[in-house]
Image (tube, rainbow, N blue to C red; front, top):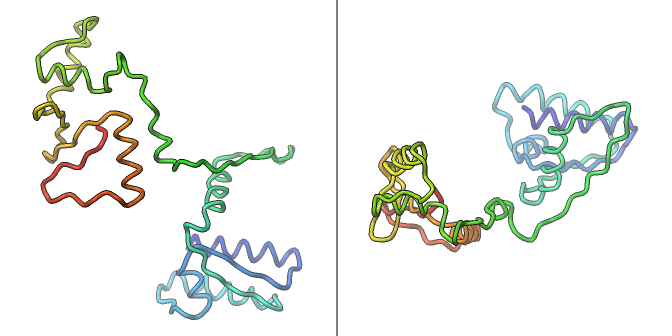
Length: 204
């Protein structure tokens, strides 16, 4: 319904501008193929929307509908997201928005190189406590109590630390560098599927 409403708003905007030839591109296969008559409109809630669109397109000399896959419509999606986030003061001109395309994927940019103390991973204190029951040198009593509570959810297998989820699945703890590598491999589709019962590596 939202996709249809967005389509109707766009068509109405072009009608107001007296545009007579229009190409409509949307990343909703449902809307596009229903409007082209290639798919039936079975949902009663959508029938009235489709009927309205078909009435509106009578205003055009020529109109065509094209399905645009979502991965080819990323700029429009990004602009729509920005539009929902920004409150525009109608008394002022809209400020210029600069956009840039990053070489690395966003999911990889979210993992920064950790400024790890003495080059230790983020879970070093938990690992040392689980292994040797040792606290950090500067730990106060509250820190020790927190560390004990956190450590109760972790399991050590050799030198590999795992976090135990509520469903008893074990998650391998990795540092920032390894986490970034794993994410890159997963999103490139090069990671092999792990057998049932194995622990999928991920940053806890």
